[in-house]
Image (cartoon, rainbow, N blue to C red; front, side, top):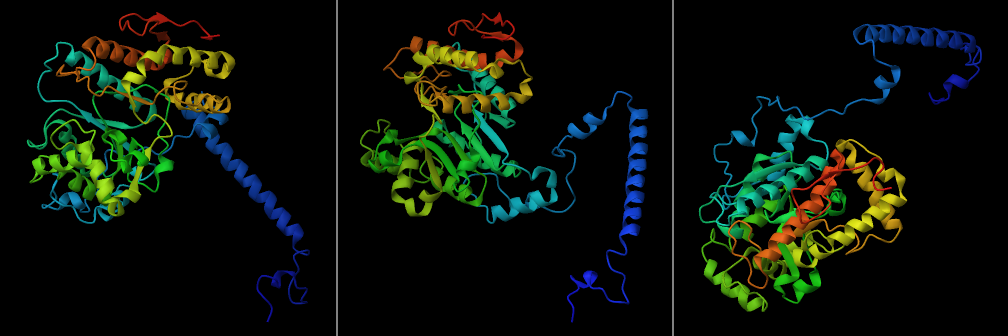
Length: 435
């Protein structure tokens, strides 16, 4: 029996060969092309009638990807219709990954890409520090600027979702509620209020963390040495998944939301010899989990040390002027980076600059911009700063870091702070700056 794939090429006297049918196929082809051209002409005539300024290039080139549909919520029941669902830490949610997946199935416009929701906040009351509220506003503006440039959303909270969860423990009820409120988000990005984005162009390498659920700044070898400074719990990425919900419950159980906070404080002090705070804190609790329950949690935790995921401010702020000069030299060398452009396409220029600096061997600490500068110990709202430095140190450092970041934003608007210690003064930029 002949295979149907080869039957067209057999020269049976009862079947016409492909060669004999060639003239009719060619004729059919001409008819098809002619019909398609006529249809395209009719469509073009209709578009030209509706919008006389349209060109063929604009129709072909400038297509807009489908945006999330914020007006569509189908009647099909989701986990939100379950009366037992809780937004609170300690009330377990089961099968969260399946519930998220089902919600995304019925809301398909939200199902593309690694969406990030940045979560931050401050205390409910007015700051005791006279300039505290001013600083909180500027610190918040910095986070809004970063997310506007990179397409993430911001949730700013200033209420205690759990009255027991105060201080550094206040973030965990917020994170739990944010995960439930944002099933479309793959990552929740916690950033302490006193942390400043100082590289507004840098984009988190989320693909790098595809096998992990928690990303924080730190070093595994220092964790093994049982050092309190082996990592920092003030800035971290956590994936919106069942693992993370379970991890947050376990993490928060060592704080005031749990039954034995005093006991945990003693355990942490005995384990971490350089821990100064007497009570249980979330940073010590994280180190404890990585040391004592590493088999359960450790494989999904990534401690980032290849770039400044977050940096201690005291080692950063004095070098910001020199870093500015270094970046200006790069812009002088690479003319494309001096081109004026719309703010919405800033990521393109950031990627060009990053690649150029890597090729030049400049992509290293103290030469490149630190991604996040964390003013640990300055307490801008309360003013109860660490006595190892003065308030003037904190104030000047925050002004420099905020203006350093602001310059990267203002440049898109044609202005810049010429002096990082003068927040009020800006000057217009000339064309082709800094040629």
